[in-house]
Image 1: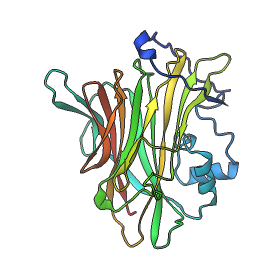
Image 2: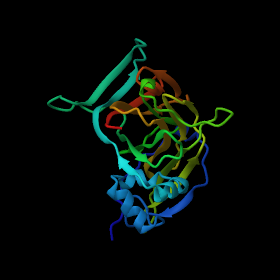
Image 3: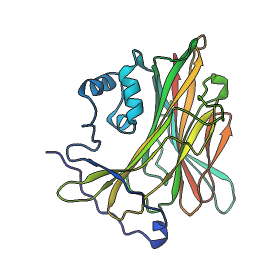
Length: 290
């Protein structure tokens, strides 16, 4: 039976534990990192055939899973990662510093930055419930390769240029709809490590409906946690006559002090503003033929 690899977790400073713990929902994680046993086998096969990874499936809520079970269209958009890296603000000069870890067309990749994590974003076309419009689901997920020492409030955002024409549905009060997020940690337990969902929300922290959306992540101060991962899904619409290629960017903002990341809008879309106490990991992907 496959179990999680045990790792040594460094002792955290007391200041890093200044977060509120959330009572998690428990799932059993003995056979794989992501427990998908609650998902219907036929649906799981459908998702895998459509190009969903286990990591992406693990962050889908029950509402989204039901939608994807019923949709007649489930087509992954052709995608290619074009750039990945890190941005932070130099504390001495106040200037933004950009470390490119990967860039399409370069012979070799560059060294990683301060954040040891994986970040990705993809999109799928699904059956639309609005006449004259196409509908897509965007999924952005993150995974810490090493548990962070500083555990305050982080954030995850996904954004695209407003010229794309994609828009997020809102209600009459201009509140974002069809947004979902799940976050997990894996705890070092015996005889098997266990996966806990410590955050589940349908309310983003901020959004610009034609450029992207983001939410906050309160990292739990659990000393025996050996992994953190999660992400968001957001439905968007676009006129059925529009098509083309576009860049879409996932951005993770990590706080190294008790300062919550703030959101911003740039020509590239909705994003997180880097700062002296905020380190930003980003992954830009080109989506084609949408």
